[in-house]
Each structure stands twice: as structure tokens, then as C-alpha cells.
Amino acid sequence: MVKNTFYLNKTTADQLGTGLFKYSLVPKERFIICNTTLCEMLNYPNKTELKKKRLGDFFANLNDRDNFFGSLRKDGQVKFFETIFKDNENKTIWVMISACKVTTPGNGEYVEGIIENVDSRKEMERNLSLEQDLLQGALDSIPDAIYFKDLENRIIKVNKFYAKGVGLKPTEIVGKTDYDFFPEDQARQMATDDQGVIETGVPIVGKIERTLLPDGTWNQVITTKIPIYDRLGETAGTMGVTRDMTAYANMERERLTMLVNTLKVLGKALEMRDPYTFSHTRCVATIAEKISGVLQWDENRMLGMRLAGELHDLGKIGIPLDILNKPGKLNNLEYGLIREHVGNCYNLIKDIKFPFPLAETIYQHHERLDGSGYPRKLPANKILPEARILAVSDVLEAMTHHRPYREALGVNAAMAELNEGVGTKYDGDIVKIVSQLLKANHNKPFWLDD
Image (tube, rainbow, N blue to C red; front, side, top):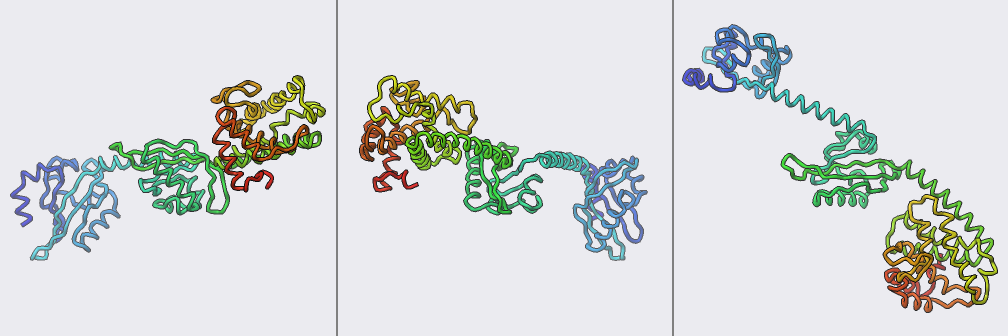
């Protein structure tokens, strides 16, 4: 039946782009039928010349030949068997064979099958593999964690640096999520970030994070995440790059600690010279830090806020004590000297680099929203949030503390002053936070609890 089909459709078979053949196994190996396409594929001038060859002669790899015929005899068929053939000029081409074995009533055996030239596809696969190898090699040479995720935030590819960080092979990471490597709250935030990038298409650039590693240690990293797209321009997932900044962060923190300790030495000098001023600045620092905590500022910004409180009156170290502790009213000259303390402190620390605007915050803490403050009479839009907090903290502590020229006025008087000056002198949001903190502490100075 198959034989008749080949003959009946001989013209059609010769026009197909796939090689067709019928090949006898028993009693003698030989081509019975082949089409023109197979001749052209193997570079033979005609069917007569091709039929002089055995099918096994075309296999460039003897193991492939044995595997092909072995599977054919065992299973009776072979599907999509890829191997390399040698053509009539001994050139190699990749082919894919599908064939089945047929037994005739007279105990003869033959094979019917098709052979496709897949050389171009193999070339594409080689090029794609080369591109993938080059990409993976480039990724693996980068000393940052690089990772790709799908739309479900599952990891689909990582580089060696990432794999080393989690202590697994890259193949063991594929399919996992951040929940497999990080604490739940941290993984949840990472997933939220990924989903935000996917939904909006807006990258996250340079986000600073602290990461708990599987070995129980913490590091500080800076992460960038961008959307990735398929060939149709549809979002396919995200790519992330995370750089370990732990060593740099530790070095910066050590430098910052050294600077802070140096400035605290100056604060100690102020304490020895004027205990009242030192006590005032310490309390102002606590108030300012608690306000910034309510605002949920980050660790560095809160440190800057506390340090500004501790140092905001450091400029008074150069003012004569008889003026600082004068029990009576100051004259214009004396008051002018007192006002110079903000500039004195600013000039003392302005050239020191901090990760927060310390010098400018101190310089502005006597500025007022309506421009009536000093030393520069800044308008509201020029006054830093830190300086607004420091201004309120300074007034609150000063009015509730004993002064050389008067007794403490108390919390109610201080809040009356702040509320009266909301919008003209003081920031209303900051005054509201102070009111909440006092209420939570039964209207008693919450800064004295520390």
C-alpha cells in the first residue's frame, strides 16, 4: 500500500521540500524509493546515484548510526532523530529523521521515512546559544547580584554573584521567589516593588535596603529594578541589579561616628562652661528626634535631627558667660551677641560633610515662616523641614525650662506660644505632633522620660 502511494504520487513527492525514502533492511540493504528532494539535500545528481549508497553511509557519527538503527529494530519507529549527515562531497549537514519499520509477509523488512534538512535551524540554535553564553558570561563577570523574574515574581535567571550570595547553584534558584531567601516582611516589600515596576513600567533606581542573608548576617545594598518586555512589547517581568554596599556603608558610618564623637567633645566643652545650655540642647535633641520618629524619617535623617539639637547652641561657646547667664534684660548690644551664635556654629561645621544638612539646619533654627526670624529672614519656602522641627523643639524646651532671668513657664504656656504662632512663626504640622506627644504623656514633658 505504501509502495503504491509512493508511485501514485511520485510527482508530488518530488516537489516536496522534505526528503522521502523507502529503504530495504532484509534481505538486502538498499534504497527502494527516494524523491528528488533527498537527492538535492545530499548533493547527488540523480536518484540512481543515491540508490547506490546505504542509509548508514550518510551518518557522520557512528554512535548516532547505531542508536538510530537500534531504536528502529527495538521500537519499530524513530521520531525526530537529529544527527549529522555527510553529503556526496563529504560536507556535513544537520538532518532530522522520522521513520518506521515495516515487516512484509515474506519476512522482508523495510523502512519508510522522511528526512528534513535542519541545518539552518541548528545554525540559529548555535547563534542563540552563543548569544546566551556571551550574555551569561557577561552577567557572571559583574560583581553585583543580577536576576530576572517573570510576571509572578519567580526567578528565571541569575548570575553567579547572586547564586553565591544565597549559597545555591543557579539551576537550584530558578522557579523560586524572594520568600525562599529572605524574611517574610522583607520579601513582601521586594514583591511589592517588583509588582509596582510591572504595573507602572516605571523603574526603581538606586533604592537603599538592608538585607538579611541566609547565613544570618545583614548587609546594605543598593537596588535598581527595571521592566523587561517580550517581542510584542508586552511586559514579561523584571530585571534587578543589587550592589553590596556594606563595606562602604560601614566605612561611612565609622567616618560619621568619628565626626559625631568629635563634635560631642565640643558639646562637652560647652557643658563644662555652661551646664544650663548643655542641658537645654540635650533636651531639644530628644524632642527633635521624637518628632522625626513620628514622621518616620530614616535612620540617617533622625541621627542628623538629634545631632542638630545637640549642637544648635554650640556657637554660644564664644559668648561671655556674664551675658549668657545675665538675670536681667539684655541690651541691644548683648542681644546682638547672642544672635551671633547661629552663625558661629554654622561657620564651625559648614565644611564638614554629613549625609544630612546639619550646618544649614542649625543656621536656620531661628528663622520664622513669615520671614521675621534671623539671621537671614528666610521666607517659609526656604526653611528646611529639619529647621522647622528644631525651631519648635527649641521654643518648647526653653519655655518649660528655668532661665537665669525667669522661672520655667510650663507646658501650657509653651503650647500657647506655639499654637498662636502656627502659620506665621511655626509649622502647624510640627506643632500638632508635639501636642500629640504631650497628650500621650499626660501633658508632661515627654523629653524628660529619656
